[in-house]
Image (cartoon, rainbow, N blue to C red; front, side, top):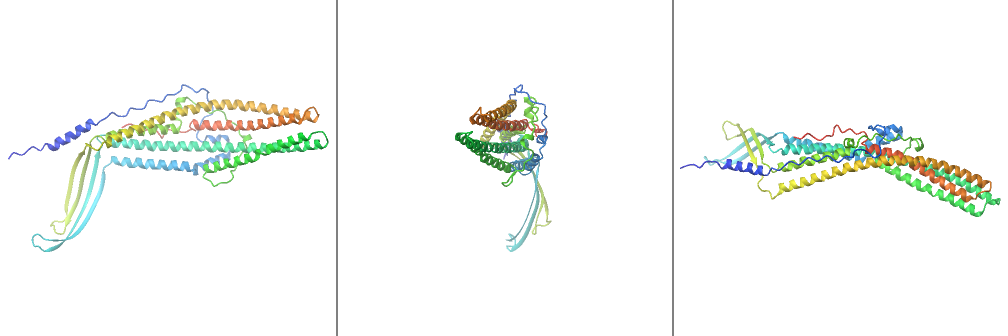
Length: 469
């Protein structure tokens, strides 16, 4: 009898490999470099942007508040936890590159009937076995998945740094807003005292016949109008303190103040550098780029899942039973298997399409983040120059209105002007003083915003995309 050749396994293996080769698709195309403006519309200054930029203002209270926020802020703690999770997932994925080694051990005791004597007997058995397995990464799926996990971990690190940068800037800006409200409250109370004295003087003049009841009513209305501002400012101060306490993860309560707003000096525009340098200065842009790298690697892993996989196995151990002679016996095995996906209801190809869609999302997010960053820096540079001009004009306006008020008061005392002239001058001076405080705070907050928008001295040396396999 002629035996048929055993070519079926070889033919099946060849068919699997051929089908896998047909499933091969092109690698994802690398993203094109984002469009970068040639220069900023408004040139930057000379102040270098260093980590710890807020210390240059010399306010110990602000330094302490930022240190407390960095230690306790909930958003930063969550970002750190997400980073720890991403790093752990990357370590877990790295383990897939190595062989696995397991130990299996078991024992049994049974009562059975002998086939020879037809009598019952007791049997005790045991087995100890080391099992090893290793998947050969022929398609690059494991390496691509590892690259994706590592890029996600690096993106999480950059996002943590972005949260930290945003936190320091938000604490500084909120603290400056609080100092601005304090200055406005002090100015309001000073103006209230001045207008109350003016009201008393007007009433005295009314009693002596040198002023009318209308002037007294106008003076009282103006004093009460100024008094209405005080509770509004106190409420705003309370809200600002609540915001700062939340950033510090504190219970509600007052916030310690350092130097008043008048003692703060603007440092000038920070060095903006070239627009192209911004891509490496901001952690949020680095995170967006790394997320795109991770999406690319995940797409490659999804495509590689369409290809056959090769798995090698080996085992070594011993087994024994009380009914066997020469117990225990050494046992071993060595083998390999090829697994090629033939039909899975379109699941693997759907995963490829999903990965491709996620890559498109990451690419769009990166492009949007870069454009938004360029727009933010360009706008802040322009705004800073305009606010500085407004502050200079406000200072001149304040001096002119203060002189107008002195003239109106002298003319009224000499009988050449009515209280209405003095009232108009008072209102103008109070509004100008409030405006000057707002512009001073806006100038300082513009510097803070620029330090944040320019990266706050962040170093991207530890957050680069992994090298391509």
